[in-house]
Amino acid sequence: MLITRRAEFSASHICAIPGLSPEENYAIYGDESSPNGHGHNYVLEVVLEGTPDPKTGMIIDLKDVKEILEKEVVQPFDHRHLNHEVSAFKETVPTPENIAIYIWNRLVPYFENSQARLALVRLRETDDLYVEYDGSVT
Amino acid sequence: MISITRRYPFSASHRLHIPALSEEQNMELFGKCANPYGHGHNFAVEVTVRGELNPRTGRVIDLTAMDHLVDASLIQPMNRRDLNRDIPEFSGELVPTTENLISVMLARLQSVWPENFPQLQRVRIYETRKNTFEISNL
Image (cartoon, rainbow over all chains, first blue to last red; front, side, top):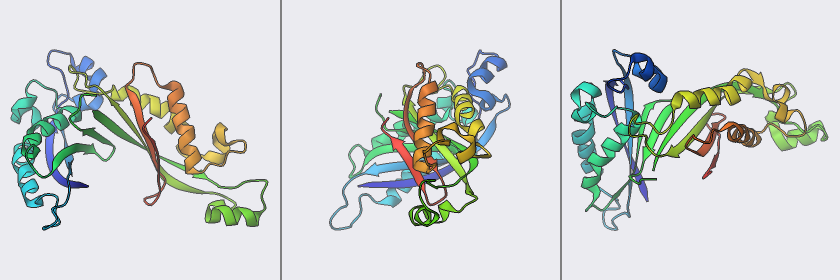
């Protein structure tokens, strides 16, 4: 059975490879490379897989999941500039793909010895764009 | 596996109607969708691709290139159009149901999909808030 918990954060970013000209970055990232940055209301959906405990009827205590998301995602990202304030994105371009992978890597240890397995993270950057990552290579 | 999903809105009209049948038979088959002058929807088509992350750009696909491709092959020809009259695939006997529309859209995408693009994984059309159609595991 799958259960999905949602969290939201608002953050700014710039998608640009250091060392490339603004024109070269625009060719890769379009408006996402706008030099002074811009922001999104990101929506994160974390999909967990498990079997309900026969006694509690719950796959996992969602309060715990909420606290993990708050600590690992919302507090470090919300109302921050990802390039300047999240150390992982000083070198890595904060595309939604990279943000989703980074979030997956932060969350996955919490679910390694847990009743629920981390199955998927879905990161919505706008209403028109989302990425999904399940930890596998291909 | 990392995937990215992009949503493209378009508005179009259609009429579900088989000329060889009587008006009564069409009404029985298609209900209000067979009303004589057609009707319209705010559709949205979602295109999902999956592939490997380009480590340099942090992207799965060149989104600008995909946007241009989808815009040229699907959105420009269909947005603010009448599917029955303006779309060649529906000039014959093919009824522009959204099931047929999604097959037409997928065929158009596959015919122009560049070899160097990551794999097309799913196409989904939202016809209304209540009706969604998709072809997946491509």
